[in-house]
Length: 307
Ligand code: SF4
Image (spheres, rainbow, N blue to C red):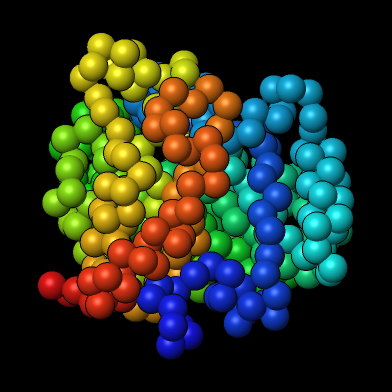
């Protein structure tokens, strides 16, 4: 961490680890979600839209190879070297047979170690079989693989109320199994979930620090069209955070992470169908607001680690 910097940013970590900043190429491999097809539950998490928190590219008719080609070309136009992270984002990408995971990775294989500097796989903590980890461990020799696990909140009650249908214990177990394979592990957290509150954000950060995940993606609660949350929001039963409040909660959160954990994201970008909060639509300056808040407090990432 640079002296002046009060948290460990993804950009700095990329430069340390890969010698340059990397851009994500978000991919939709046509995976499904056990929380939508009935094997865990129906209807999905209350904040998740029908595209599984992803791009919806496959449904629009763009196959994985075309998505990858277009994404890599976009990165190459923006950056000198054009190296990217292939990010399997939509739905639960280890909720497929190992052979299907191999097929998906085979599309990426010609680019691994070249334009693709790393592969990132989004999934659920309770949907990570050893057979998938076998495949990903082998792949890690070609290009670093990291697993992105949604925790969202450390409260089992909040997780149940938003229909996530996994527990904190399952999250800790998944992290242990990922780390045992020598893979990197990144966790997602949402600040402002119904019933979680500021104290909930504190607890989530402390659990993430305890888990030993390598990185964290923090998001503000967003209300999207075509979600259960949208219905509750329209009834006035759910509210979202103003930008200033989010920056303050995020500062609390960052203070409770471990100093070495990398902040892969500080906020969510507005996908299509955003209803609230409206500040998610623009580049809201969360990074600057977080820096300013930590500076005002005279603290930094990890200041209350273990408290
Ligand atoms: S587990 Fe992921 S893909 Fe499935 S409903 Fe929840 S957020 Fe959406």
